[in-house]
Length: 98
Image 1 (spheres, one colour):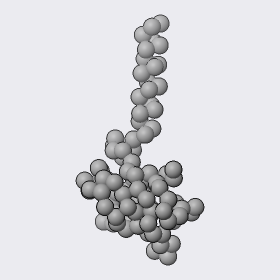
Image 2: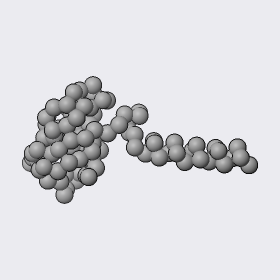
Image 3: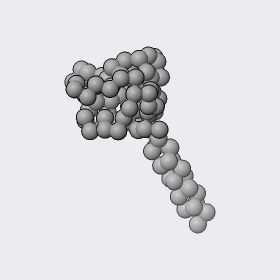
Image 4: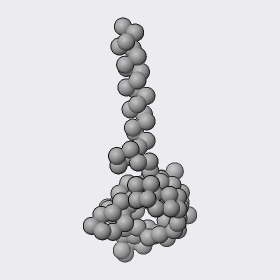
């Protein structure tokens, strides 16, 4: 019974850790939206390091994988996001507002 309880506890805590990670155990990045371009479905983001892309902190323009992701966003808003290369373009694939 103790083994079963220990296993359940281990699975519960590892699930919480996995929920915070995406794209093959890469953490999401932090950033601030500095410009929104709805016409071209792009966000300019002042961001921290992008570990999965091996990029340092900087400000850059990203496309968004789905224009609906831009709804409710505003310039100056802090976000947590994941970016990747999609068809050769740097693209925001996930976004969470703070």
